[in-house]
Image (cartoon, rainbow, N blue to C red):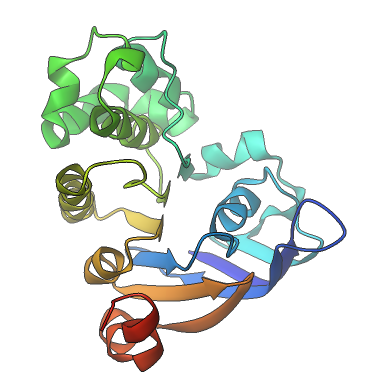
Length: 235
């Protein structure tokens, strides 16, 4: 579904991402893990079109994204749930979800998607008329995820969904991601610093350090790797 080949990208002459290649197959749950400053968020921004690569190619369902502006990529089926949630605080939960349904597919499937979102994330149904800015951090994260689902995506990209949340709430968010994947068969690409939880959840993972992919494999392979065990799992 998604294939990056030799991507270099950044915000100045010195690239943040250096020759990054990765593949996400349809229906997979893939995790990108690594320390702060590794380039994980830049990677997502490059896939979304916010950052333009200086080298390499990004293919999505056989389409080269090089000539497709950021505003058009959600219409292809790419949903980006950004770091820090970034809900619209002065809009209600329902209005935030409606903002996510701006894609052609999202508009066509709005009623069905809304029912599914409320079934998966019932707190959003309870809070539908509440301003998003008055919600807890965990509830705002659920709004952000629901907004992404409202676009009827083929690929859901989640950037640090556990950031700033209490451990119990972060665990709940991971449980919801597993439930969403099981219910929708959606392809999910996750950036996360909670490496143990990310690798437990994902089918496959990539380790990004200093802008380069240094390790890749299925979750069992990565969890058994001594470098991962020592650097990220505290073992």
